[in-house]
Amino acid sequence: MEFDLFLVLASFAALLVGISKGGLPFVGMMSVPVLSMVMSPVKAAVLLLPIYIISDVVGVWLYRRSFSAFNLKILIPASMVGILIGWLTASMISELTIKFLIGLLGVVFCLKTWLKIWEVQEPEPASVPKGLVCGALSGFTSFISHAGGPPFQIFVLPQKLSKSEFAGTATIFFAIINLAKIVPYQNLIPYQKEDLVKAIVLIPFALIGTFLGAYLTRRIADEWFFKFIQMALFLVSLKLIWDAVHG
Image 1: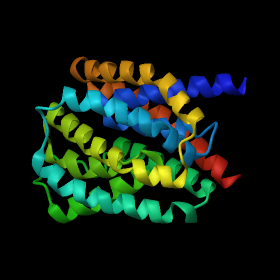
Image 2 (image 1 turned 90 degrees about the vertical axis):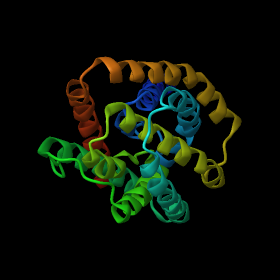
Image 3 (image 1 turned 180 degrees about the horizontal axis):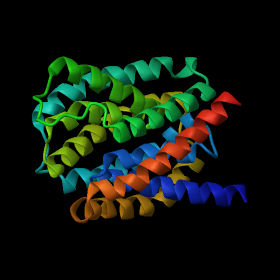
Image 4 (image 1 turned 180 degrees about the vertical axis):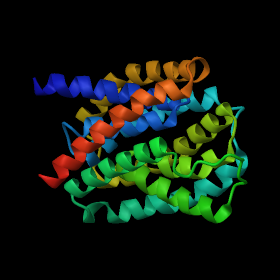
């Protein structure tokens, strides 16, 4: 029964990863919270990394002609600093604390969206200081839970990029972050043969999700799709906070 539950949740998490790489980057925020219900958040993040990288290959190919080079020049160096901080502090933070932080991040993200905090009417130019801070936060939160989307969103959304340029920038940015996490993750929790077998089993779900994400990006209005995703993320995040507080 436990393995069946793991397989269902892991397959769903892989599908979410693929959808995020297909053009809906913040859907991927749900992957680690979902998988954290049956394993350590850090272990969940490590297990999903190969799935992210394989999905990245497809995602980068899909958006290879549509991205903001200027934003990437600001965000990528800053994100490397965030990853380094996450690597150095990972062993100092308990699993319950990580669960709480992941849950809190999800709740804040949903409330920000629903209350329309930081929403602007006119496009804002990219600010280098703000980009450096948000890039570092994206690297750090992506390292601990593959949840680097909100800081990225806070920085990029006010610029009012086109949907394809926004999706392409996010896809390429997080593809580079994921490659940078390989060595630190292997250092923290070395991959075992069993982990790689699980990852191979999940690859088809991720690839299906990638093309599904690209289709949804083109066909379905973001508002309706995100209403469901945000509510699901909100509920999962509350569950993680509850587990952390009562753990």
